[in-house]
Image 1 (cartoon, rainbow, N blue to C red):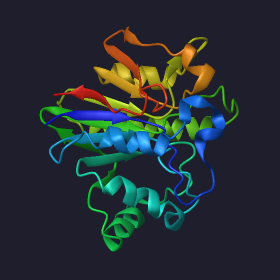
Image 2 (image 1 turned 120 degrees about the vertical axis):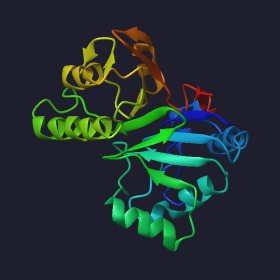
Image 3 (image 1 turned 120 degrees about the horizontal axis):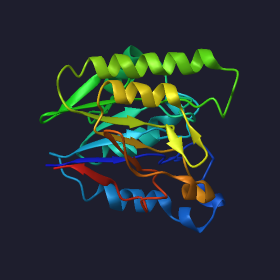
Image 4 (image 1 turned 90 degrees about the vertical axis):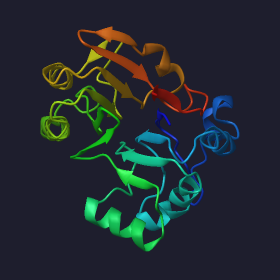
Length: 226
């Protein structure tokens, strides 16, 4: 039994957006994802840190969800900037129930527990992408804090889609929230290709930071906790 994480699978079994167009790092990526997930067991837990499916709706993402559901580990989805299928928690849970998708759930305005650790997360944001959209940033900080408060006194492992810091940029509001709740580990995705070189990993304050984009990990989920 172990906790794993990976982000940015960008599955496209129905939507016509194959990632192979982005270069050799993405060749046969669906098959490589299947191989990586195939090593996990029913007792394992996997956090998917955003940009899971290119589907524009739940119906279009259904094939991608059923692909993931073939693998028996429990999976928690964090929202990414390209998860256009995302809707309310009630609609997602109803859709999963109606389609017989048993291994997927969401990590959004809540937290879940793995052994003695709390798993928290949200999409995140950075003003570098849209410097005028302070409203969106404040909403994401609020969602993160809601998730962290739900952890109670448990040690926290946090999963974001957007990186809260990388070379030449940081999001002080997100970093201050992580520090306030003494988050021990923050995993993030979103960075691909040449942008991976700008990643910052390792400890800052009391928090360790780690990039988990699928192409960076070679499509093999990273073990986070035994």
